[in-house]
Length: 214
Image 1: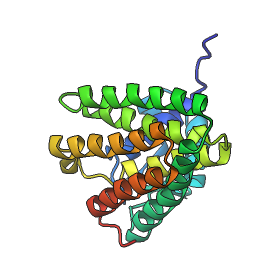
Image 2: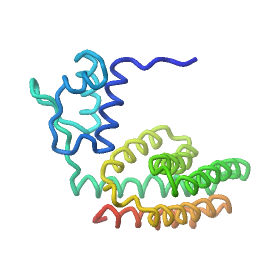
Image 3: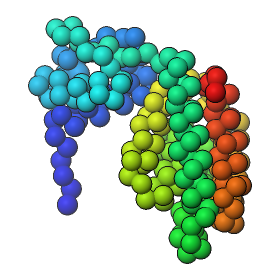
Image 4: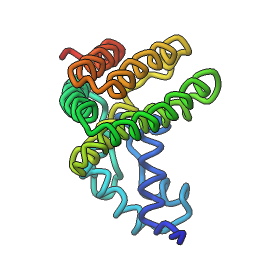
């Protein structure tokens, strides 16, 4: 059964998407009225949506003025990469050590997502990012820890707005695909050490791209 999103949910998603895709830049002050007009709702659900975004660390609220989009800092870049290393390295190791039937099912799913990434690398960059994200999330979710899964989603949201448009080149996407193929091969073969190592190498690439210091 399809549930229609509430006015608050629509205001939240509209504003969050604008922040993550940098249509609203870091350091910019956005008013409740502008968001309300963009979504077609009253200001009350916008206010509730902004409170949720403030709790996520994406905006800082100023009464009667609006919401300031919190700029990306070097510390945030460092923290996101470091935390992704820990969460994804651990869950990839867990995935590679799973029972053969579970591991095979996960590998098949990862293979489908990798194929989608190969297709989208030559065309729809946004669809490529979604497939990339789904690939990693499938590994994290396989650990069966909802806290890890929720944390991963938050980390990827934060990383998305750190990415300069110019970094999403076809060459980088192809390199990304090769790195994902290494992770998949390690999971499929049941090699936990190789899985953690492949994730480490992949995160090293992300760290260089974003200018992370650790």
